[in-house]
Image (cartoon, rainbow, N blue to C red; front, side, top):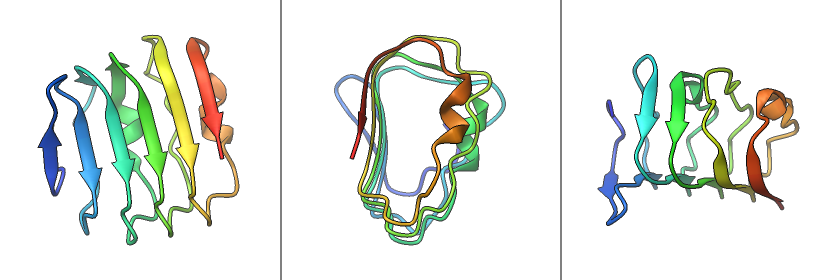
Amino acid sequence: MGDLGKVALCARFCCELVNSRRSLKLFSRQAVSGSLRINQNSNLTSIPGLSSLIQVDGSISIGSNDNLLTLNRLDYLKSPIEILSIYKNARLTSISALGGLNRIFNIELH
């Protein structure tokens, strides 16, 4: 999974980056068995590792990242996403990076 800062591996093998000063680094063509949560990272301005994802078996949650400015494209992500939740990212002004996604069962934008 690369260097994920404070990583918690959940019962469903989810990948979490919470309250970390580090960045999410995923290596080429990375799969996550379970959910991916990137929450409460006040120093996070971008998530370049997103562009390497090819599969997430659960949901993706990106929230309460006060300085997140951009989302990277998810061009390689071809697996269906259960829930995509993007919330309380005050400085995030565009979600155009999500334009390539075509198999999402539920989208939550706050």
